[in-house]
Length: 448
Ligand code: UD1
Ligand code: CA
Image (cartoon, rainbow, N blue to C red; front, side):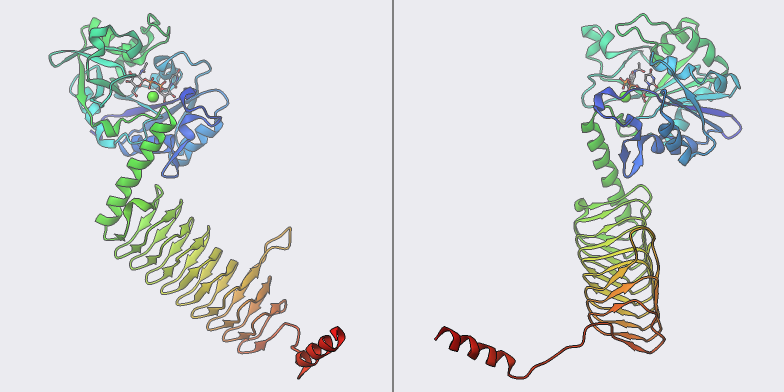
């Protein structure tokens, strides 16, 4: 198919009223990626030479989300929402450039697959003027119905325009359409507004092409691939389906998920072989867990890398820039942000490490805090290999603790500590023999 050129138009100008949200519908995330991001990724993967995104007025954020995935996407604004055909025509300049195939995809169908798009393009290559992706949802209410005459698709009737008889049809418009690039503008320009909603319906392209004696084809696509999100309920269903697929893929790749239904992935999560993930783990965007790492129960990770043999948690939080080396340990109630934790270093209990470099095999005692922020700027803490930080120490950055150095428990360290030195920064202990006993005796005699 690569010899045929293709323009993909992604419609994303709808108001998404049914979401009841101040955020445009297509910016709601599934697996941490906006719906529109999923869609433009798929159309690009299907081999579209050009991607055009149609957005509503003041929807720069939608355009940006699309361009984050496909930087070359062109953006067109539909100033008035007059229907799906009207929206396609907002990209008239892109259509006029002349492509062999035109593919139209809705921005609210995140699971549209490159294979489904390719199947529709094949129908156009075989001579169809219009090709429609049909589906058989459990409940057809709300969808356009495909009116078939044997193998031939005669028309699409929107739910609101159906007769009671048409309403019983289970074969529905999945919203995915391909058209011959040479004929598309002519057909789209002929679409009127003679329907209950007085909108320019894209599905009317089917009846118009038929009237002109052109070939119109429909194929059935798995409902899961054209699942459209109109409500928060649909969004939750999409998230559940996405997570189920990711869990299956992680396990197929050789990871153990002890309780798969309690582990949550992002669209870009990378999980190696022999990774073990215990129950109740949430993984945000930008996380890589390498072969043989273990994530124990109740951890939250985002923007982090965990190398092989490292053990995280239980109850640990890795924030963006946490880079955990091989065989390192990050234990309960530890938070790591923007820090390189080198091989076999141990940060086992109740610790905050931010903007830091922790040398290999260093031991960070319970309750250690890197004081990285002075209220306006952030500073780095450098801890050398094999250093030992005693419990309950505050390391006031910028500060460097040398290799093999030792910090006494309860220290507040404000100056650099040389390699192999001992630093103690705390009040000296004062011990007064018999003081407590004498004090007790004094209060007894007072009462008498
Ligand atoms: C649409 C189809 C219906 C199909 C269903 C599948 C039409 C008229 N109906 O209905 O046959 O069964 O999808 O999910 O096409 N949009 C614009 N500008 C507009 C209107 C819509 O850009 O003026 C965009 C929306 O952002 C959305 C897409 O087009 O991404 C579809 O619009 P939506 O209102 O969700 O259509 P449905 O009612 O779902
Ligand atoms: Ca929809």
